[in-house]
Image (cartoon, rainbow, N blue to C red):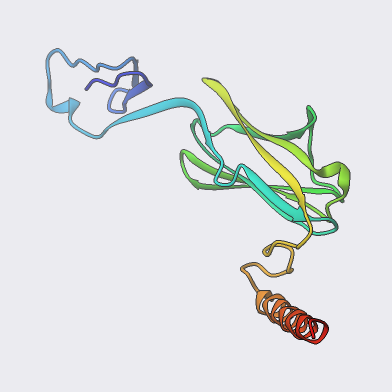
Length: 180
């Protein structure tokens, strides 16, 4: 068995011996050598950001996300202006392991204030290295749903759409009225 460019630990459970490297050699195979062999590939974190730029209106919440692939599982932190963020009245940090080597991390910026716009950094570290990715939060006039609507998945968006339609109709009527 050969594995290139990644670190592999080969574990032989029959004799509880551990072989580190990318080759396991058994010189003289005996019936006692039968069984299950595991190859555990360990690697430094790799981060992807689904949306590197996000806009949201003042006083609304916004979720910033990063997806991390690493083994062993990494320590994950979010920072802004080189300050590590923690759960408080301004931020909520969540990590969800979706498989042994996959973790999704979400930073919810709560009731956004002007000073909270800017670059956020998601950083993941394990014993093989670290990686980081940036997410830029910028100001918009119109709230973005979700999470601004207070629902988990676009809930309440129909009310905003109805309000926008009403405003568009009012604008057209006023334009017609004043253009005469």
